[in-house]
Length: 463
Image 1 (cartoon, rainbow, N blue to C red):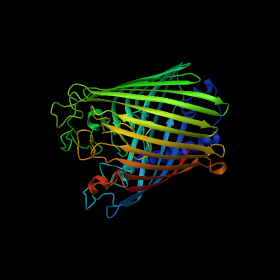
Image 2 (cartoon, rainbow, N blue to C red):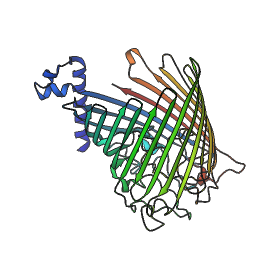
Image 3 (cartoon, helix red, strand yellow):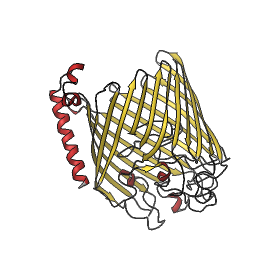
Image 4 (cartoon, rainbow, N blue to C red):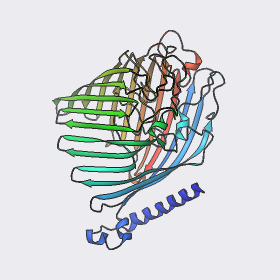
């Protein structure tokens, strides 16, 4: 019944948006208030359709996976009334194909890692009842300030949409933004989240452990799922820019769990009208707050007193529509970098698609990237290669998820269609990850991590 109602509302919204697109004429401020109907018609509708095919090929006799998802959603934002407006959106997903999604690999007993996040990680067998009420907020905007209360999207270096599956992460809370001239500041309180790859909403404390959660420092499986106590997350961040320099800072306080501070600074050095060198440095510091979520060391998210820091560098060169960079990241051996994957993806410069550094200490990574666009920016391309050294994956003290050292290649092409196909984009992503070292890791540490290929094809349509 819930699905029928959701689908009916969606079709109704599509019909109204098409009618408005054909018949809507600009309204004066007076005309907007002649009736509720004329006022609401002045709002903005968005239709988003998406198909996503993904396939992971593991080495040898380890299980291979594939899936194809199709989804659509509708969003609406009302006109502003004395600075206030409301927004809402919903989305549903169908599974058109899957191979081995709901089974564990018979050799390692490992579950699927990537494809299941196209649907519902908590119910891999569910391929049809996948709908989610996403945005639902009221926003006040005046001059340079906006305040948004409710379910919404945000994008920060660590809490973000990580929008590389069917649907992104969402947060619920109070978020504010202020900007003027060279300065922009944002922040707020987050009380609940809806991670990508799920259709449910969770309080901050209940969201920990929705994704597979690795090991404690003694090597035993982590038991923090459902055992962490926290009242939410406080975030404060900002950006300062001028013609050559850009500085960014963010502070994250997960109450009763941890604090994380982040900063990056980049400087552009123009050597001609079309050639620019870029130099950058980034860093973070993290420490446990209180007992890290639970007084029991087996059930806490981060160990009491645990702390670490990391630093990254970037050297880049831009010419016309081409950009190249060499990037590094080092995480100190004083502790593990821990940030719930349910909240977003870390945006380190050394990062490449389909892998993260979260869960590691004493890590060193280097990557090089090339990006280009052509045909009036309708075609965007990316090539990346990286090398990452981790500690011994059998030692959990600094390697929460048992990740072997790896080398990494990624290639992506995105094509925005034009003319009669305006609004349609086609994207391909191909990734290879191999183990770095003379001795291949055992199958339970290799599957879905190293010595694997992954292929992705995404078709999007928005209006």
